[in-house]
Image 1: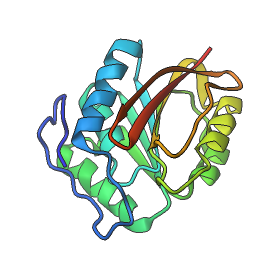
Image 2 (image 1 turned 90 degrees about the vertical axis):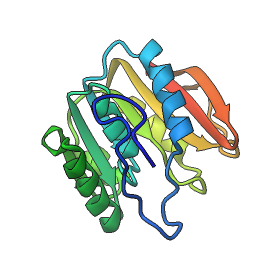
Image 3 (image 1 turned 60 degrees about the vertical axis):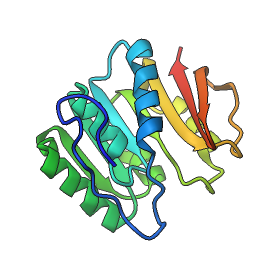
Image 4 (image 1 turned 135 degrees about the horizontal axis):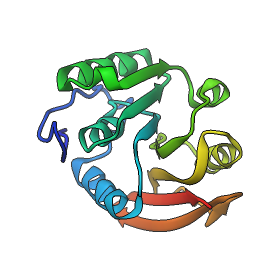
Length: 181
């Protein structure tokens, strides 16, 4: 897996082997960032939930984000994210939280411009998490939430103040972009 754009374009990322993590493919990441480039007015602060290898957050940093927070509950994934950040030279612009996403929502306290969510395909709780994010202080007016999910996970058009503004699919992977109004 490689970074598809920005200052570390082409850099290979380390990924956890063994099926525990399903990395977002280069094609889907490239499509997602193409959407964000035409949609997001600002992506200075990003949050990568269910970060896995950190590919989405690292891609954002490579493409100009000032800061990225990463959350994953698997210690091996956290170590890989830190390694990928170090190898790309982006570690000084990031922090990795090794805990589950629900816990992270209880202590993170900054507004993010873009939040990435790429939960496990078998996890049906993406809608519940979108509701929690809508009610949290992590999302401000204009914030975007980009959800990568299986076509089998049906998401609603709105979650409180979050409105679906774009949706695309690439094989079994759907990209749903929500914005706080």
